[in-house]
Each structure stands twice: as C-alpha cells, then as structure tokens.
Length: 223
Image 1 (cartoon, rainbow, N blue to C red):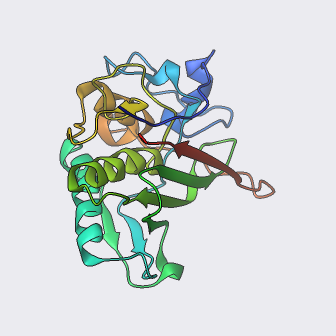
Image 2 (image 1 turned 30 degrees about the horizontal axis):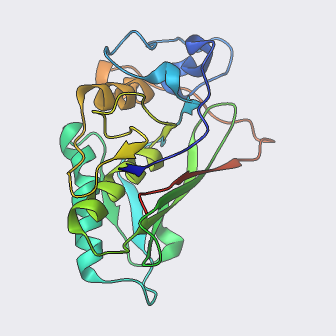
C-alpha cells in the first residue's frame, strides 16, 4: 500500500470555514452552502477548504532534467479526472512560462511521493499559487497518473484527506490500482466552489493589508 499523509484538522465550525461559499470571512456575506449542502462528503475531516477565484487556472510544467512529454501526458490525464468529474467547472490551461502560471508542476524521479505547496489568504481561503511535485520513481504509469490526480485535488483546494479508502483523497493507495474520484470527493470539492454549482455569487475580497500564508502537504508513497 502507498500512503498520502498530512496533518488532519477537525473543523469545529463548518459555517465559519464556508463563510461566503467556501471563500469569505467578511461580515454580512450570505452563507449559501455548508457541509450539508452536498452529501456525502468529508469536509469535517479537512483542515479547511480553499478555492481559486476563477477558472481556468494556469498550469506550467517545469522543463528541467526530470521533465518528459510522457510524464506530462500522464499528469494531465490525472488532472483531467477532476475536469471531467466537475463537468468542466474545474478547468486549466497549460502555459509556456512560469511567470504566467498559478500552478507549477515538477517531476521527481527519486521518489514515488507526491507533494503540494500552496499559498492562500487566511481570512478567505482564496488560493494565490500552488506547486505540485509528482514522484516518477519506477515509471509506473498508473501510479504517476494517480499521484498527479491526488495532488491536483490538493492544488485546487482540498486541504487534507478523506478517511474513506475508496476516495481519491484517501491517504493510502494500492500501487498499480487506478485511483478514481468518488461522489464524496466531488461533493467535497463542490462545497469549496458552491457558487459554481448553486448559482450564487462569491463576494470575498481579501483585506488589502493581509499577506498570504503557505502550507505544504507531503504525501509519502509506498517503499
């Protein structure tokens, strides 16, 4: 079995986390969804839900000595699981320069692990940038694709893991067995982006004086 690991935090107040539909903590913003809006989900098991202000997000693949078109294709297949599951609500475009990217992707042949680092505004949960590292050790196409899909789930806002072994975002996976997005995975992400799914507007500008914070989720794989 492989393992994705991160510190889990129990959310004592879902209403506080989801103020402004997963992205607003300012006073007077209408709360238009909660952890009970899309069931089943694992929102209470997460540290919090984050969100990108709009889609598509821009993705850049670092063209270093570890890059290959083959790995890029596998990663995009993993990312596309979220695109397809959300009916293209989650979308991305690949860009040719790092300066134009919100999400930067790196490949690491020394490990099977995955790692995602992102920065966000703490009052709203709005994402600013993300860095995804995908381990390619062993060159197993199924595992590389699955790790990419799992890490992209973190990069688009799922800050934590599911406790259900059937879910894409469960911290453990079986090598050479494809991970699939479940209804709970989808509902958890929909909670973060409920304005897209129930037709409401998000109003959550970050305070001008607020600086983004950075979080890293390390996802160790099997030996």
